[in-house]
Image 1 (cartoon, rainbow, N blue to C red):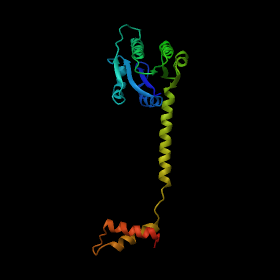
Image 2: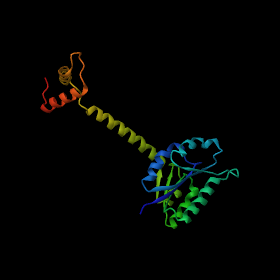
Image 3: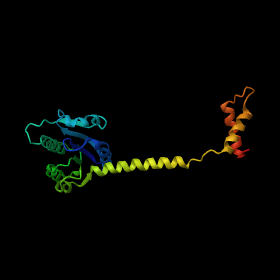
Image 4: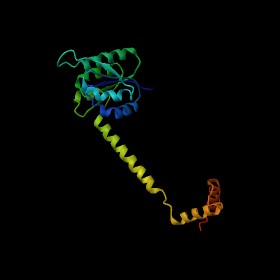
Length: 207
């Protein structure tokens, strides 16, 4: 069964630098049909998130901090999660936060038959980690991304080094071929050179 996942991100609790790796990882487990991020977007601290939201089709949900010292973002995420649960539109959730306040939510969603993924930093308290079916550390995702980039760079370098270098023998052959097809003014048409190259290559004769 294809897994349709609701991705709920605690913008107050997760660095924006991880969003690319995070979304790629979620896509390995299913289709993220709902993607929302919660926070007080009037707060300059969340400014770094704004430029990545459109790129990843994540919907920002405005949540004002009504009371000093109270986390209104957590409450908004929990209420939305329950609304989405009863809508029947998804069969999985991904809660992106390092906050143990979502432990009870993860447990409740699993009780309802949902598959629950958690993504957060290594500082995430253990109760939230074990409440999820699978928990992924974002620092590991970043490290894997850097390793993949390094492997790709090494692979490209190796491919380039494996290309045969042209020798003086081939250079003389090309030069002689151009001389053979050149007109009285010294001009050689590309088509004529190509035909001559093909004939010589078929016989594999170098001067």
